Length: 108
Length: 177
Image (tube, rainbow over all chains, first blue to last red):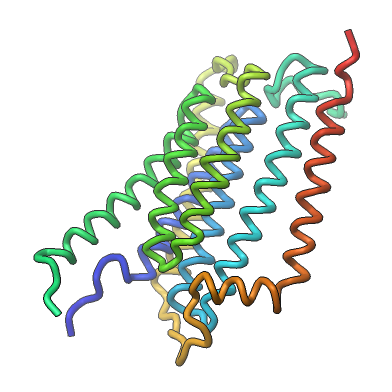
């Protein structure tokens, strides 16, 4: 039995997805501006999508379900980006800054 | 059927290129100090992801990834970068605390990566016995208009609410001096 070609092994996709999630969480913890945190959140979304697609391709009985789920994730991510960026612009208009350190009005 | 010589190696090389593009884009997005470079890293990461989706037998989602993420999300973030000035501030606290928190974040993300990798890649997942559909664009269209039509309509409603909400939020405060 010949070994599977490299693009037909699910563990590679899962490893890439885990790496994307780890990089996204690292960025989310280290970023100090709202837009940087938003970009890291997008990386986490991408990790979830890649995981869905890998399991959909290799392990699911119905291969359309994962694709539709990832389409919905993309739609919700687009909606989230629109809302979050408008909030960021409103915050910038009020505070003249999007650094998380300075947005401390609710800080008790 | 005769295949192109070394086609397997060429396909593997393109696949590795996609993987490296994805990971390098994500690293650029998370680690650079200037936000505009971070946005470019996100775009590079999404192009690599589109290639991975193509390898996962889903050219439709590969197209959608480029269309939505590179074409819409990254461009919207670039507009926000132009309106605000979101560059990472210079490290103002002393180096010890920065090193501590950076190390802590690194440890957390490494632990999550190790756990997920151990759970996902080392496990023996059972493959399905038979496929119900072939996963083509036609099958996706049938599913979207039959089984998932309710969720599809709800997504369109959520997008409408998001657009109106974004307009309303971004508009308030414009008349202030």
